[in-house]
View (cartoon, one colour):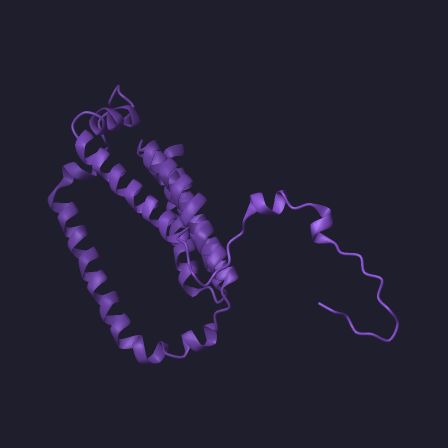
Length: 200
């Protein structure tokens, strides 16, 4: 009974916050509603026993993606009135996409009726799903996992090299030359006569 009430609570708040993401006038409020939707989706994942996906939603999506969205929206000076000006022009295309998504949801509901086994509660497994996922990842899918790590490493090294490349139009800093400079080389005391200009 408590699990059913928790499901309806999480589902209602998730759908409501998703609708608020779309209809919020302030983009910062949209991102905050999105964070609330992610938290409640994580609660739904906990109810079905997928705690790894729930933690991914909280750590990756709330902790990184949504916060990045929030910083980008707050830092960029975007004229949202200009963005909303093309709403009527793009309305037919948006309605077409909404109709396609509605048809897909209808097909999904009919497929669920055709396969009632998918709607049943998942079987209890004595092994936690994080342990099962780790066993599969480091045994059966070890080579693709390591290849993905190498690709990400190459991308990270490439970004660092592109950022720290030497440019001819930028004057670099020589730290050892600055530290070894003596005070008498940096300051010159001059007894300037009255009425004469400064001689360089």
